[in-house]
Image (cartoon, rainbow, N blue to C red; front, side):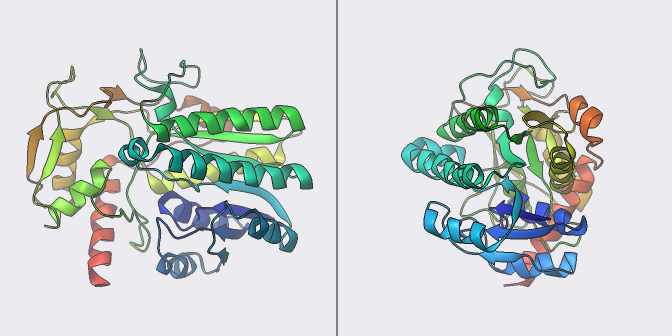
Length: 338
């Protein structure tokens, strides 16, 4: 069975491709390399022992996308192709709406014409905003996200719900919390472009001496140590959730399915807890400075992932320290390539 993976050389996409190959799926990757590099394709093959098909083009080019659907019998899609920098999305909102939504619609048009089902969407816990209660479950009311990036995720979900309902298709919306870590082989991991937007890559680069210090945005939140709290999910655990969600869609007897799952650990960790865990896991020092809060940052978000365990047979298995250890091994691998 052949699965189209868009953005399949990216951070989460590459780990998911490995898990798909390990589970005997054939994989076709489309990735424009705007947030990834070609060596990731070779590393996927080293880990999985199989090489996926790969096409380096922009999904906004509908004629090229049509050629792939003509050439392969696509049975489903996992869609990671999206711009993802929250801050940049505020500066370039039209770019984010065009890239994140037009590409999604182009794929769904092919699904409609060819009567294909089984679509998994890479969504985000940003659709919840600052929830009123913790932990956040799938029935938590959605709030308008602060960023254009978050808005594209919420809009993408609505597009897919309408698609499934109107055409009788099966879709799964996976709302990730905060992915961290790297593959245990140290051959796959996060490749931030420029200054990292996410906490753990910045911590890693600070420990490696690439950054002088880590800026911690606020220590006056109403939390135990005053820093913001998030749910950090190991990327390989997250990748495995995609395979479980896909298998559920494929084996469903129902024509129309709209699955929604939170993918997280169910535990929140503060920024300072992550820094201290990183130092313990890797025997390194992470100098930091407390700065003013950033506008738009929420105080606390962590998942209730019971539904994923109940319906998918999936749960997070990797500790925070072990996930952070793999990140340091990935950093050492990247330095060895220089």
